[in-house]
Image 1 (tube, rainbow, N blue to C red):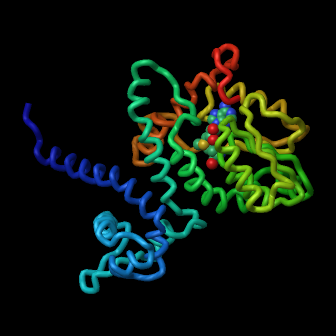
Image 2 (cartoon, rainbow, N blue to C red; image 1 turned 120 degrees about the vertical axis):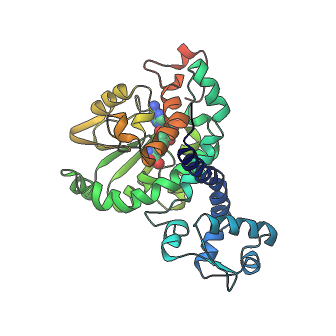
Image 3 (spheres, rainbow, N blue to C red; image 1 turned 45 degrees about the horizontal axis):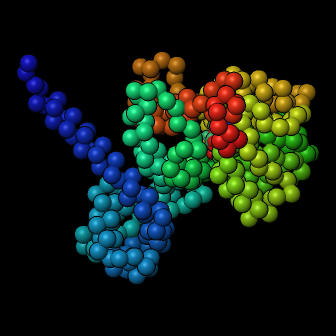
Length: 325
Ligand SMILES: C[S@@+](CC[C@H](N)C(=O)[O-])C[C@H]1O[C@@H](n2cnc3c(N)ncnc32)[C@H](O)[C@@H]1O
């Protein structure tokens, strides 16, 4: 068998890019956590100036800055030895309200990767892993990454695209946000529609606690309630609007959840499903976005859907342990 060295070299080139991207995930999380991108967004500076501004160690910083410049995440001038951010880099890395804010995605990836040893075992056992069993970075990164997209679209275009929903929410409706995680979408809706009442449900208790705190901080506790509940049995009836954001595909029994949503809706109620877009045929998903989806699905979504907590008909007495619910 003769190796085609050109093809091999091209593949090695791809590998170097991928290896750099894999370790770069940690670099972005460090940059976001320490406010390095935000400081650089204020103007180009040397590593010494950035260290003084951010209270960080210059030697570590120099290494981090070099990794960022090599990866095209920040700019570097060989004449002034200053590092900075272009307008576009600042929009994506330093502006939390921008719809293109990306650091949360790397926090999510890093958190998900912590599950690799367990998921490798699951390949043999077939066992699931619930959302609640993941590293905290998964919950924080998920909210940080998704919230800007919801802030940019939910109130301004998704809700108005639905028949009558905006009018109902403006005059005072009853809304359930199912699988709400840390409540970013619930809170955005509550801010926009002060006459409506919002109920955020998620089976993960830590996310619900964080969501409650967030609602309190933003002075929304009068119109937002967060409760630990599963999609198949959350309380309440006669909802005008039920929404699920990026979670139906995580559920072990999405059909059972859909039945419960239907029963919980009032007359003329509306169910909005927000899900990542993918094609039905594998060959049409073999692209960079498909790689992101399938990799996250292997580590997070598929194991969550196979977690005993979410299996059709699961209950605490059949599992032999009361767990958290
Ligand atoms: C990818 S996160 C999305 C969170 C949030 N909706 C957002 O868009 O930021 C999936 C969420 O679904 C929740 N979840 C998964 N299965 C669930 C179920 N059967 N019932 C309720 N929540 C569930 C998880 O706990 C997690 O918070």
